[in-house]
Image (cartoon, rainbow, N blue to C red):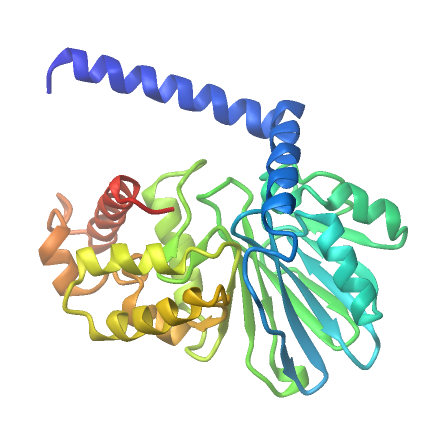
Length: 325
């Protein structure tokens, strides 16, 4: 590769690192988030998508569309009238849902520090004085009161929610698994920016090996686990999946359903992990067809995990070139 190309890539990386540092470590990032919030409220006064809650034997999961494509969530124990908010980036929208449901907010679960997931922590924790703010101490979560480690459990009424460490997008990224056993329903995974419908998050603070390990953590969960992601990226993600696996019939069926939903501005969550295994290329790095089409072959020692990590890195590179999120 010519030295001029290397120099240009280094310059672009330096600019990116500088911008990312400003966004995550200074109040300039918060001001940018506030600007995006104002624009989204004006553009989507009722939210970017129409969503439907899911009710399971006294537990309700309520998706809240915020910003231009984010989702926050309320997890509600309907008997105790207690609620947990996940990634409440727009405090006004989340508070409106709390009041409509007539519940008490007792906990905020933050998957990671990015403002589009944590920007509402301050206002909501001030408004609800007894509300606890959970997240990773490695991630600099705003207004964090209760640090969590891998496998820690948050209990609210009948809700049993386990934190799973999934670094890669950020160093301290967590996902939250609501155990379905206490209410005899499906478990629910609130995946933040680790995993989307047919996609996964960018690796901002890690490498392909780290992200692969985090995705494998999710792969260890049951097929009927419901996936509640942090963004509405379904249509674009499935479009990219069609580029790398054009003959995948499961992807084609899901795309047809998603396109019908989006024509009416309806949300596409949740999917199930069983579905994701069938069409999400970032969960299919073990598949021979994908490896043969894109992969570099086994690593120098024949290490399969090395080969899968290289394939994941190539998928990420292609995805970033694709006209999608």
